[in-house]
Length: 259
Image 1 (cartoon, rainbow, N blue to C red):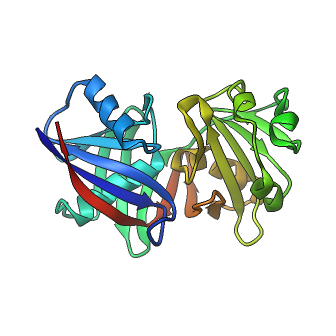
Image 2 (spheres, rainbow, N blue to C red):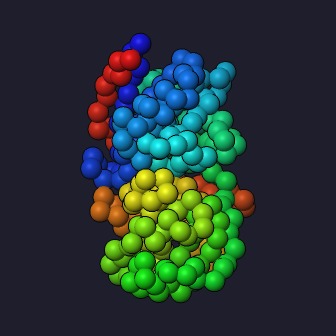
């Protein structure tokens, strides 16, 4: 069996920026254990697999360890592959996923994801966070991820977390965010429970951050920067219970999996 494999840097303007994702088109679904083995072999934060279903596509995402419910950068990468390499016509792609229907639109300034907005509630600062980060966050919110709000971009950039401590925090992972110096907000995202200590650019986390910052700043269109070592820019727009995330994607390589 041979499968095509694309590796794409998402939320990036050039290679070696943004977040790399593997994309594997399928004619039909393979056994879940084989999908997981391929993702483990790729050893990227996410591998996306998709199958055409009529006018839409069924999309699934795997870390090296497990399947996840939602992944922004790998969805962006998948749409890029369909538009640029697999001849998808029109300006919109519809994906069916574990998080419901997702849409990706092609525009003059890249690709725009239409995702469900994340919900969260304010909680007390989880115990051990000051020790885990060396800086005490000002607020904490519980949602799909634990979101910690700090005071400045410089604090976010200086974080050197204790990943073992972060594994004890409620939720899938930990988002650290603060006002940006030359953008609306910045962030870094940590997922040690998923064996991804720091994710370079995390689309799904912006579904949780964008509504918070939209309410705090009093506007619905925002520019965000994830200040990981690779870095990436995400343009956010909050529309009711949806969040639209826009960015670019660039090819790194195309190859063949032989099984």
